[in-house]
Image (cartoon, rainbow, N blue to C red; front, side, top):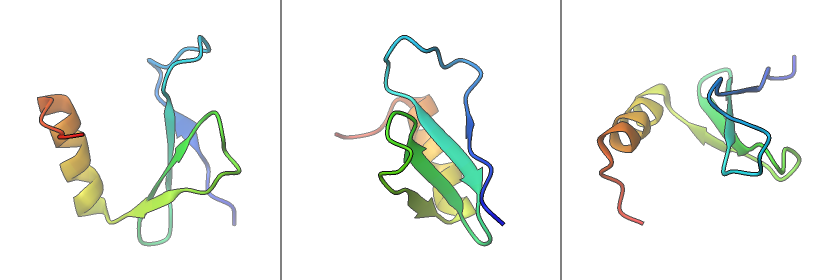
Length: 62
């Protein structure tokens, strides 16, 4: 069965940086909404939760 990808309700179609997520068998998939055929990252649920926390906390180092 193919994953069901979803985008945040806060996303717009104005060309911003948007991602989509999907529940995979043992992971959370993350991909670029503007390039859905370009592949995806597969994160464990714990790593995905940590990523969300760091995004919300604005503590990512780029």
